[in-house]
Image 1 (tube, rainbow, N blue to C red):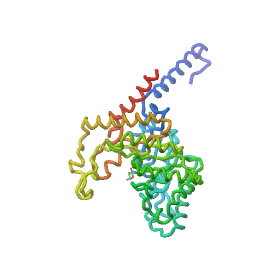
Image 2: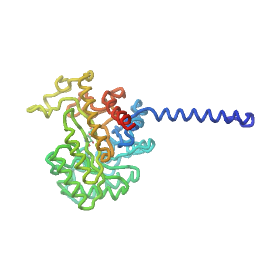
Image 3: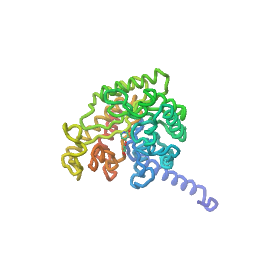
Image 4: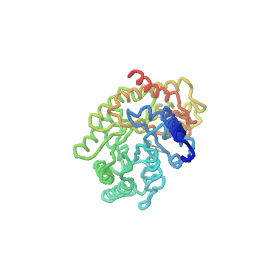
Length: 382
Ligand code: XIL
C-alpha cells in the first residue's frame, strides 16, 4: 500500500494513473487473445463436451484453453442415466455437481445431457415390466436430476435419439411400455422440474430426409399438444463428404420454420473409413485397429486430408454464419482429437482427427479456416 502522508499529491496521482494503465493493459491483452468463442460471440455459442476427467481437472493442459475457446459445455457422459442414477435409490451427483459449478464459474452456457435415452441406461430400468412403474421411475429420475440443478442448467436434452432412420419411433423400453407418449411425458416432467431451462429434442442423422421428417412430425405433435419444446439438437457426427451442405441447409430451414432454436450439439467429422460403407464386411470380426485399411493414419494426418477437413469445416461454418439468426449453439463433441469418442467407435483403437484441436491442444488448419471466416467478415464490413 502507498502511504499517502509521505507522498505529495501529484506523485500519488501519477502513481495511481500508472497502476490503472497497467491493469487496463493486462485486461485488454487478455481480451484480445483470439479464440473461437470470442470470434463467434455475436453469432452463436461455441461449445464442447467435457469428460469426467476434464470436469475433475485431471487433464491440466485443458484448464486454460477450455474457457478461452468455448462458452458452452455439455457433459459427455456423467449426466446419462446409467452414470448419474445407477441404482433405483442411488445417484452419483458428485461429478455432475462439479460440472455445473465449473460452467457457472466461467459464466458458460450449461447444457444437461440427457434425461431419457435408450442407450447408456441403467440395467435396472430395462428390467421394469409395466407402464405405470416405468412412468413413476421416469418421474423420479427427471425430478431428481433436473430438479437438483433447477435454475442452473440452461438447456436440457430431454429426449435423445428416439427415432429410427426411416423416421419411425425406435424400439426401446420406453416405447414398448409407455407407447409414443413417453416423449411428451418426458418433456412435461422436465418442464415441471425446471421451468426456466430450455428443453430440446436431440438426435443424429437429422439431415437425412426421412429421419428429419420424423423429427419434424414429433416436434409438431408436441407443439400441437402445447408441450414446451424450445429447440432441436442436430448432433452432427458427420463425414468429409456427407451430409451435403444442401441437406444441412434444408434442415436448418425446416427445423427453424417450426419456431424453435436449431443447435448443432455434437459436431465432429470423421476422416476414417466407415465399416458400414464396405458392403459385406463383418464389422466385429474383420476389422482390427491394426488394420491399415480401417486405421490408415496412426502416425499423423497427411496434409491432403488435413486440407480436406479444413475445407469441410470452413464450408460448414460459412453456412452456419449464413443462418446465424436461426442457430443458437454449435458444440464440438470433445476438446481435441485425442479426446474424441471416434478413436474408439465404431472400431476400437483407431487414430481419428475429427476436431479443431490436435492432441497437443494446438489449433489445426481447420481451426484457422473457421477463424478466418470471421476475419473476412470483419474486413468486408469495414
Ligand atoms: C458418446 C460418448 O462420447 C462416449 O464416451 C460414450 O462411450 C458413448 O457415448 N450420441 C450422443 C452422445 O448423444 O451422448 C454419445 O456420446 C455419442 C452419440
